[in-house]
Amino acid sequence: MSRINWKGLGVALVTPFTPDNSVDYPALDKLIDHVTNGGVDFLVVLGSTGEADLLSLEEKREVLNHVIIKNAGRLPIMAGCFGWNNTKVLCDYIKGFDFTGIDAILSSCPAYIKPTQEGLRLHYQAIADCCPVPIMLYNVPGRTVSNMAWDTTVALCADSEKFIGIKEASSDLIKASHIIYHKSRPDFVVTSGDDETALPMIGAGGDGVISVIANVFPKQTKALVEAALKGNIEVAKHYNQLIYPMHIHLYAEGNPTGIKAALKIEGIGNGRMRLPLLPLSEGRTTLLTETMKGIKEQG
Image (cartoon, rainbow, N blue to C red; front, side, top):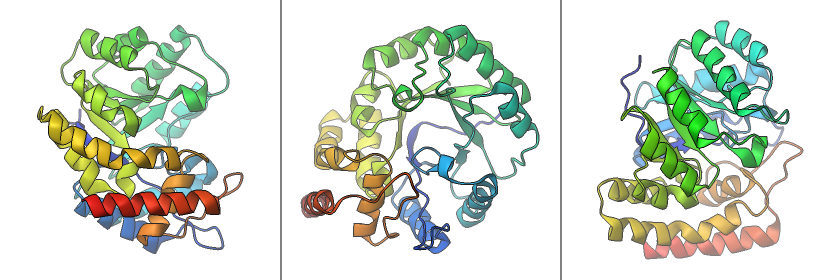
């Protein structure tokens, strides 16, 4: 079992595209260097922010291989392309997957089919039985319409040490607090899946955030998380308030639309999306540019 510490700041990497809609590997390299130099603790590749559902299986493998080589062991890597509606299909996929260079997977709840809590528990138990690397649970009901209850998470924590934690992206701080209080293992990480709830979740005893904003502002997000984990609340509040105006622009037209536009402003990538997603509108881009300028001026 992995002894990697998954607390702190993870970044949900975007997948840049070229004008002809292929993966832009030079831009991806630039992004990896940017976030690594900015102090993030681990990389999350091919999550929802990485547009994994808009990549073919071959492209996913190529992107993972590229990140593994570029990273060169500097940071732990969590692969996010392991959410599936069909438990058997997912388990077959895992059994045939080469996990060399991958330290853990991030597995979202099945989407669309709306399983019961017992169905969710059995789904994740099946994954644990076949997966050779640790598993981070991922509850993101805004995307899946499948909301894992806190006691289901706590039960999975007790069921297997294969589950190293949960990315809780329901924005429900009461649920997160229940998980933090009732979990049976101190090493089970409870991390925020939303930048906006990172500070209050850490304040309640959580362990960090898997961040979107850290793609463009890794140093500021790292300072927020590090200060919060150390109990330096005034410092954490300062950085939270500094980057907070980004939220309304980043998600106004969907994710990763906003963060790709922000990276384009920063000089990384071109903001291109794959259909059915579209680039950020001109008016919103103007507002985002002004917001980013203000953040840089304040430090």
